[in-house]
Length: 296
Image (tube, rainbow, N blue to C red; front, side):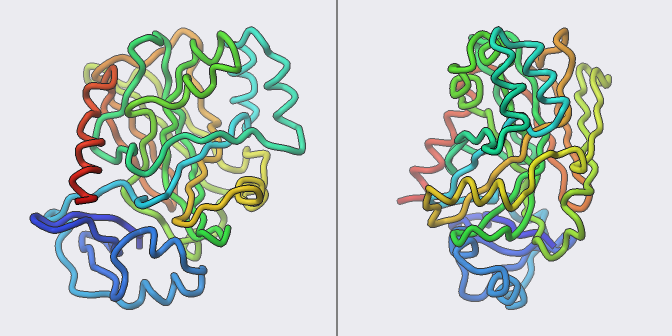
């Protein structure tokens, strides 16, 4: 089962439940924000009250966050990430220190309206020149700070911009098409052990695999609830928040994404996410227009 947002022709976006190839509405619930205001117990009860199902093929699946929802990211949470950041950076010590520091690195990535999802394009900056995908397990937390589920995130990043100066991290991380989420949220009660999941990345170019990588969330050095507690302690997230937990797969410095590359991420028990790379902001102008239409 996955929590999803979907669109039927001529209707407004709707939150629901996907089971196999069928999507069903939830009685009394319209938006994902409403779901993410519930406790885990109430969310579980709500997902048992389903309306009539429709085939997945008849709907458009949307990013699984809406309203005032936000995506944040944690950084340098895997040993591989620490090594890659130190290799690329002119200020190596900051990454070495934060890896084992009591306080994790956390930064905002995207509001709900700027997200892309499975099958859509992801973006790389036109002024970067060295960009990579970052496949990450993402924690979904309610407005109460409870972990209610998990999804797949691609935290696309500019290695050249961040490597030049760590103070450029917002520019290296926040740009059009730079954050993709899988279409579904796997409820927390259906994931036996989120610290024992396999993450796979495949990058294809001109029909051939040009990079593959595998890691496990066992290598994640941070406790998941501690990450959420650090995030929500000083902040309110009235419509829920998604926190990507960092990457354990980083290509070598001689690899960079190109326009047309296909990036495929899979996380066991959670889901899959596949996108094609585009350059610049123009391919993502539809996101702002789509938001205006939804809010009319």
